[in-house]
Every structure is written in structure tokens, then in C-alpha cells.
Length: 161
Image 1: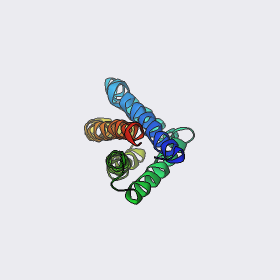
Image 2: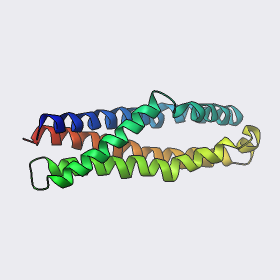
Image 3: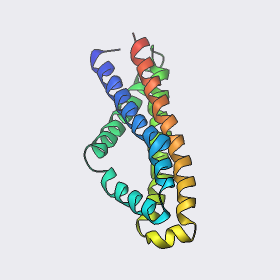
């Protein structure tokens, strides 16, 4: 593995690990803390979090990690059969499917639905409880995928020759 490719793979691993850690924080204590608040306060807090989430720095890390993983995936297909390639492909695919795609297909639509909810109504009609369950379950999935992607990419860099 060339030095440039190793740097790319490690950059992707760092991005996946950073995002995985951020998502872990949400699964581990942010969402449980929001669930303890009175419903309207929890909804309002999550709405506020969602407004700021994709700004700098998190949005930049997400975009950069996505681009790095796409580049790693392409590089992996160009070097099939070489040491570390399977780990490169697995890591990039885990992030792009388990991290990014899950975010786009599950978490983002739920965030968009929450954005237009009246906090009082959402808390009283059960929408907030439903949101918490679904969003957190999807977040667990993208947390595990992002952290596993980071581990795979670090392994690729270590065994890549």
C-alpha cells in the first residue's frame, strides 16, 4: 500500500471513528437524557439539536468521511487481491451503507418529521415516544457500522503492506 493510500485509509478511519463516537454519545446518553425530560422540552431540545447538527464541524466531518470512503472503495476495487484490500472494501462499505445510507433513509426523514411537529402536540399524542424509539434504534445501527468501519479501515492500513 502506498503512503498516499495509507493516509487516505487512515483519514477515512479517523472520520468513521469520530462519527461513530458522536453517534455513540447520542445512543449512550443524549437520547436517554432527552427521554427523561417532559415531552415538550425533549421535542424542543431535539429540534434545536437537529438545526445545528449538520453545520461545521460535524457536517464537514460527515462530508469528508463520505468522500474519503468513496475514494477508498474505488481504490480497493483497483487493487483487488492485494493485502488489506478486503478490509478497505469492508470498511468503506460499512460506513457508506450502515452509516451514511441509514442516516439518509431513516434518521433524516424522522428528523424532518420532528422539525414540523408542535412540541406540545408531539408529546401528548405519542409521536415523541415513537420518534425516540425509532430514531435511537437506527442510531444504534449507524453507530455500530461507523465504529466497525473504522476498525476495518485501521486493519487495512496495518496489513496493507
